[in-house]
Length: 169
Image (cartoon, rainbow, N blue to C red):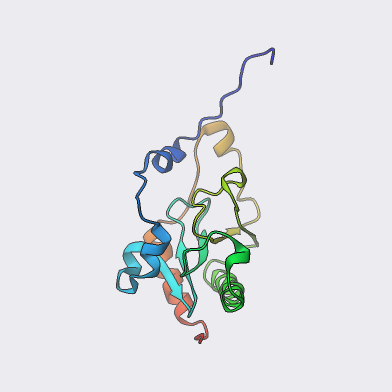
């Protein structure tokens, strides 16, 4: 490297990197406490999976779909968990379409620390709604990330929308 190093400031990530690291898995805590769904932003539950808002979202409505069981690899899920995870993913996308009207989605898994997994031990699928023009110059030039809706407002809206989803066995 011969020239100066460019620095991209991302102060919104500070809250995440400085957050105390709990000994317990936050997804396991959310999985076993249905009476605390609002406090943990769980928007929907099925028999083997649940859907939770990401509290450090990339954009409004950023969801995580996870099995109840603490398992870190796709191949460790049994057939019923795999089927339920995919069905919950479909239910999540449908609910986000009804509630937020995105133009598209980024959907994916981060498997392993080098792949970006912040929580390696509990498998989860990210569902990130996207809108035409939602990527702009602010994060690059102004070190500002715009999340247009408050997390609690999004939670209430999605809980109501998911409540209209067909029940699952």
